[in-house]
Image (cartoon, rainbow over the protein chains, first blue to last red):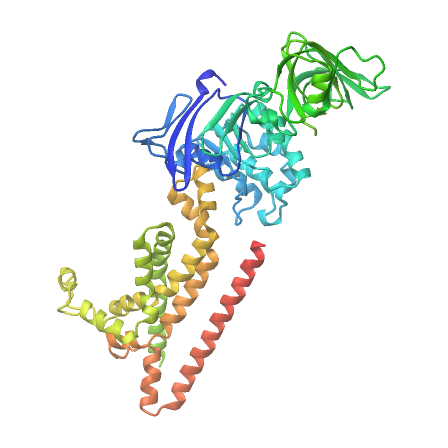
Length: 362
Length: 221
């Protein structure tokens, strides 16, 4: 997608009990995670983008087209959006195949092919069935396929996995990345589960309870920004984009590499050279002044303390830079360790990574 | 007896068709309208349920009569009055049976909620297209119920028809009036046949409605 597919949105005002004050500039590629407490207006924002709500004075540009500005307001059916609702909203009187073709028949272009969508979302066995006979996960897969086949230029996903059990959600998550890569459609993905966004998002937009945007930017940078509440969560984590390297058959480990570091990950992660996204919890990273000599921990990296949370409470959270500081890790240690080791920002340390999880586990 | 049966069936069929064309869009508009006038119109539509049929008939007689407010419009079509005519009967029946069509259809649309409608709009369906492709088929249960109720209700009406149509054999004398006249003239046999037929038919109608609803519910699940 070219830069002209960028999306610019400004919505400020109240809608009933909802307050929204949002200015968004999206690059028009990849998956943008929209994260915030429930009731902060995430769904309202999506509905404004889809044209299901008209917020007076709003502005929305998608690529070169103005969808809303002053007296201009494109009705929903004239906006090329794909909307995936939390509750799927399949048409009960139509079969899966007819549901999939509902938007396709009414769209003017054919960028996204029916066969490709059926293939990626594994919908072939469901085509003849009726929505009433589908499981929650199947229903949501059909809803995603149906939205895609309406040939959207922007996908809006309103917590599509929130109503699903863990197993079903984990089956769909990797598909979402495949979809955004395969069809080049920018996706805005609303979630109230940060772990979900850590697995799939490229960008992150944080919303506050009062309907305002706290911060936005590329996911990696947002996760390691100690001024943001997401870095202070119990389960704060970073996401690393690496390339899978050689597989050590004897020990069952794959070496994942980037210019700055190499990590050994259990399991065989696809063919060498494929992109892998890893997730490291702050609580799984500990520090040592000297390189530990006899440790069971495989991944020990020389690092530098870049930033530290101002000490209060039992724990203290740090941002570590690895290599040329291109790679950042979050680390949580006790304040006692911080004082005992006499650590200060700028110090050289060794980061011991106890566990690395593959973010996009299939 | 048979002309009255035929007339009753004709009246019920025409009335039901008019009600489908009129009542379904009206039910939709009432569900979509969130303002006070939606409630006001709903109350007006439901009024025939509580109003005595003779009262409705009385006002219709004035409205459609030669000195009524519609007389100039009727004159335009070369008509003096619609009272005591088949079109007059249809108009009366439509008003009288309107709640029996609108209520179930409105409930069906309301139960559906805006969800499927919104989904259709985001899938490039124009509002009219979304109405026919999604809202109408999904409200099908309510529409079938409304159709059956409106048909049966029209078939059995008495007071309104008597007021607006009079009792002109072959033109406005419907089934229920024939039964009344039969009893009046001590023809108990014929009255019994007609009454029994109506009772059987009504039972069948209600039974079919219940079975259809049960089947719908099973399909949905």
